[in-house]
Length: 81
Image (tube, rainbow, N blue to C red; front, side):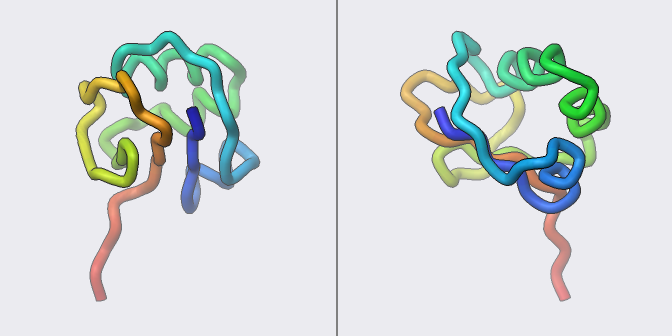
């Protein structure tokens, strides 16, 4: 599955996108797998209240299922202006 990172999440991880092999059933399980990789992921996912997530371009929550998903994107909340 493709995992996309935007804004400061991308800056902390050091790449905009990667393809990951995962057995995670939910977004939260994927986050835990990523956090366990190395410190830069731990830093990026340290405060989940400061993150939003989309699965296959649909805004969702961290308990969302990943079955059949092709893409997960992580980004900070958007502000209007």
